[in-house]
Length: 488
Image (cartoon, rainbow, N blue to C red):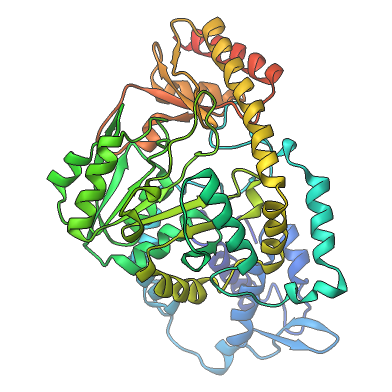
């Protein structure tokens, strides 16, 4: 059948190749076709692609199925039954579908940017210095397994049933207790909703609070996934600059005084690492209260402060309970595939948010929620965070020391006082060259330009240190130095 044409879809290519082989007689009537799995392996295709091509040929009469004898070529072809003039490819139903899809807002907007999350190879361990990740090797997996087994006792089989789209009450109560101690946020469990990710919480808020053309604020530079959700929703995104004191609130008020929603990472900015100053926190809350705006607070990396106590959440300030959605995740603190997060909502948003969550994903895994409730309630989570905080603080120090030792005149690294990553300013090589050369050498740092939209910063790299031990950090730092010196 030849090789796929990159200009057409794989399913369309396979369908056309099989139809031509049947019509030309190379696949004679009543001949047996290979199974979908066999053909998929032979041409390195997804099995679903082969099955879809077979289904189309079956529906058009080129193939028939017989119980016990597989899929065969029809003895009488549809072309022989109903001769007709060829139909131009541009007017076929499939191409009409493609034309419609090309104008679908979500498809069109998602094609404009690379996705912020990996679409393949996500199970691999990160390479130095991949950012925004903890070290899964530190997670107490044996303890987690014991808690999981306990939930599967016959006396607890109700955990296998559906749970409320708002989340398991026991987990919501445990989250409320944790937030009161760790983030200074006192809230009844009825205002907490368990979701799969902070990304999901933002998506639901955009659907509930904005319409096409409504204005929203986005930090610039800022979290790529948040910006893409905002663009995909059809909102008008106003990029508000960030400096050493965090989001420049007065710039946002000047440029978009009637914004419906603001996305902000006030405890530790993503990716620059700076906190939002107290003065700007107060100014943002005053404006939101006067304007009726919702502030979406992404509690990014708040648990990992190495040289001081973390700032309290913006949601903990007086009057914030009516205007701030606080969202945080357990997936980064424990392990990425956990896929459990929470949103603390203003009272008026609880019912519509829960209804929207029920409609879009129904609910997160009740079994995993029950295990996490025990993990939190019995103190295991706090112990895990305290332990990893010490380890990451030591690795942050090792990273700083390695940067000072190996990267003189190459990269200027900010002090790693919090979080899982830092920004290194490039001194001698441009971002594109640095990233390409480092990638080829097995170093996976992210360009700062990926996070910026309009307000450009000095070229730099966002570099993670948390998933790597001391030996790995020093060895990779030497590799970085060798690559960049050669490039320079």
